[in-house]
Length: 206
Image (cartoon, rainbow, N blue to C red; front, top):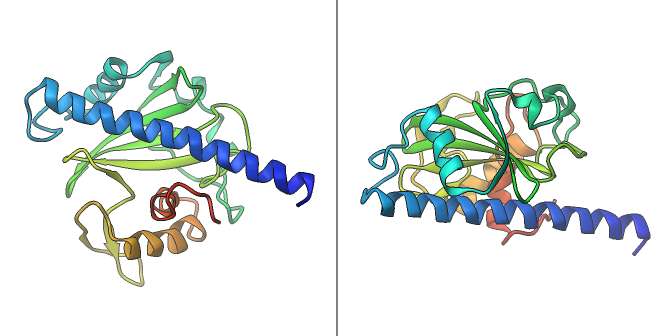
């Protein structure tokens, strides 16, 4: 195995380790919030707005920087992000932005619909490159029951939403989203990569 290949493998593993850490922290924080509020789900626990999502992070995470609504203070410029295909990311939905003590940058977006509560955008190494969706940048989806998974929408061949799956998602649906949106799709489709890691036991096999 060549030195560049070894370096590439090391970098990919480090991205996954960092994402897994953020994933575990969010999983634990969601359960703790429901416990603290004696609630059956996250909306009942008060996770019902962008401000509430931001306060949730500030309460349960070690934060070294709170950038509020200004993404540029915590993340590279949006135009610096691209997909594995090389397409540029063309939108940004983060509403509250933070840098965690681990060095990861996260953004939250309250998006309550069909079981979903919040999107969590994670740049595992903050301002450093390569700023590629599916390498060091991922979007996780937090559901009302406290489960973190990929996006649960079901789409037809024309990409129209036909329904919403229960979470945890099936391996088949995660794989479909990976091929359709992570490895392909336009710059507005940045999901599908996280579910692939869940399917492959936190190994970056792509």
